[in-house]
Amino acid sequence: MNKKPLDINSKKSSGGKRYFKNIGFIILLVLFGLVLFASSTQNNSNIKTIPLTEMISNANKGEYKSLTVIANSNEVDITPKNSNTASLKTYTDPNVSLKSLGLDYSKVQVNYKPQTSSTSVWLSILDSVLPVLIIAGILFFILRSAQGQGNQALSFGKSRARLYGNEKDKVSFKDVAGSEESKQDLEEVVEFLKYPKKFAALGAKIPKGVLLVGPPGTGKTMLARATAGEANVPFFSISGSEFVEMFVGVGASRVRDLFAKAKKNAPCIIFIDEIDAVGRKRGSGMGGGHDEREQTLNQILVEMDGFEQGQSVIVLAATNRADVLDPALLRPGRFDRRVNIGLPDRKDRLAIMKVHFTKKPLSKSVDLDALAAKTAGSSGADLANIANESAIIAARNSHNEITESDVTEAFEIVAIGPERKNKVMNEEDKRITAYHEAGHALVGHVLPDSDPVHKITIIPRGGTGGVTWFIPPEDRVFNSLVQFKDILARGLGGRIAEEIILGPDRITTGAGSDLKGASELARDMVINQGMGKKLRDQVFRVDDGMMIDRLVHERDYSEETAKIIDEEVESLITEAANRARLVIKANMNYLEKLKEALLEKETVDAKEVAEILTGAKVPKNALLY
Image (cartoon, helix red, strand yellow):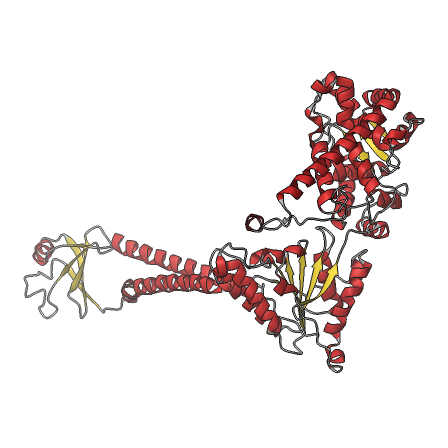
């Protein structure tokens, strides 16, 4: 359990080899330069050679100071008059004396010198041997480089998983705020890894796979690392997309290599993030049985079946699209456990924000509990982003600590986008936007099952010209039919306000996103929630998986039913528009008051909205019950 696993990502040795390889290449270049320098020096110091007869003739004329005959050599060095060094030379037969050749010894001094020039010997050796060594060295490095490229080609199918477990600050469950139910489910995995013999003694088999399912940003990867930290075992982490390459068979090779390394480091955890990248349903008709992704999936299935009893290797996988996974992955014996990690509730959101604000100077005036109440539907990543944005805004405003205004602004930036105050709107556009947002707010405020208004602004934010922001007073698990219908009505309140004020022919494009959201909600009510009138309590499959599935699979309802669905959606939209129209016409004076407040202040909060709309009532014919 306490053994230190090998770090498969260590680059220290390869870096050292590259260092010494570079040093050796530099040394070879220096030696090659020295040879060139020595050769050039030797060439520059060459003595001029003259014929032997010319030398004897000039010596007899008294033009030379001395002649030096080198023993056991045919070389004669000549020193002219008015010089102390030899600048000429000639060659003679060592077996024939110069006197016999006609030299007058009385005209020139003749010296005899033994052949002891070690420098020339070494230079000759360097000239002959060193070039061979340099060429051999260059060839050696070229071959080594080619071999290295060959090794890289062979390592193309090696796993790219990152190994954790040796770091000092390991992540544990106490470092992960919220997700208490998910932690309890994963505690069982920790027990399996810590005490495998305890379960083996009773004949219990250790689960091979645990699937973590949840929306993006809910902390699936963090929980996987915390599980490894609690069990104190190595943790191999890899993304599903890292298996798949252009070349068929590479993904399967990497899967084999990953599981082989995991078995050597057992007990350990393999974590495959975004497993839907390779684990989608097979038989889609795209790529056939030789598709690289399908081969990778097949290899994962084979490797999970190949775990021997007692190896204590558990595979954790994370996805937010469990509906598209292949059934073979989810059968017992592979991913036996399924841990659902949902969006945090209010208590968990408060705990998460306390963690993220721990190391930040937070003012005592900041009410994190109130912020937790307002952030319903936010993930852990959203809350972390709010904390980070708060610190950025506080630094930008030169605050010594994070204030309530900094946190509020950060929350609004994350939820509805930053303000675009530089975007210039003319007075007519401001007036239309004010009526539009006032229509949303008025309908949402009056209808009994709508959420309360949190803030209204006609300052462009994100991609919108203005925002009316509704926040539910508490977390909800379910939504009723009447709540959905009130949401539809308030969503159309902006368009209906434009229609009443400007006329049916002068409505604007400002309601585009509102109409799209209303249509999507109405269709979801009919198709997925069984909330239609004619098709009550019936749901209809709409495949939102791969495009090829939607093309080749037939709908499970007829054309006549599809027509009824369209009529149901149209009926819901029409009903919502009529309700919004009734509410606005019955409260026109309140619409005008709210519009004037928006033109004056540009932003109106929940308290001001409640004061302005005090007395606004819903007409009886706009009620649903």
